[in-house]
Picture 1 (cartoon, rainbow, N blue to C red):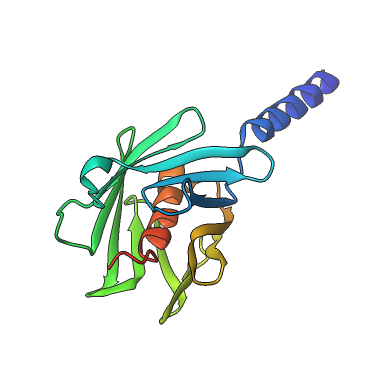
Picture 2 (cartoon, rainbow, N blue to C red):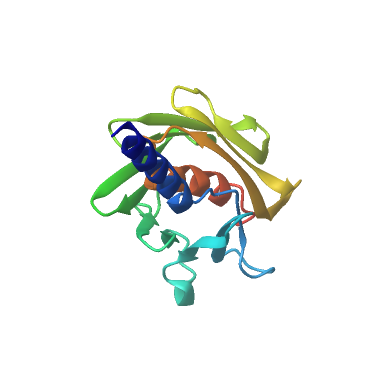
Length: 183
């Protein structure tokens, strides 16, 4: 009986490991535009994407994303003229992203009403590096692979298992989007 339990435990642990995809980066799909992005891991290659929803209108306020085969969602501003708030929605889960300080896009409060994370630029005047302000749920950082080139990002995701893919997508999107040279 003990042998059977050991075999089942090994199968359970390895099956979870095989299904888990580690997100290690995000980069533009096309070299000269910021409307489509691919998320990737070194082991699996491209494992997801982020795309502007209304590409023909160049509407920067609504996006769709996928991670793997099963996780899909949307990212949008609830009010088109308000840059200080975004929502990430996926399968009934709503992640709210708000600036921590008025008119300051360098620090964001990201919450699902159970977990709250504070994402900020490492240095106030440099949008190349972002990190969590507190590490109550693990470590997370995202930075441009090449300094001052917002087309490709490296992600270090050591967050706890209770942090959802939707919340991770919110962290990634807030950092990347607010670092783009759009203005």
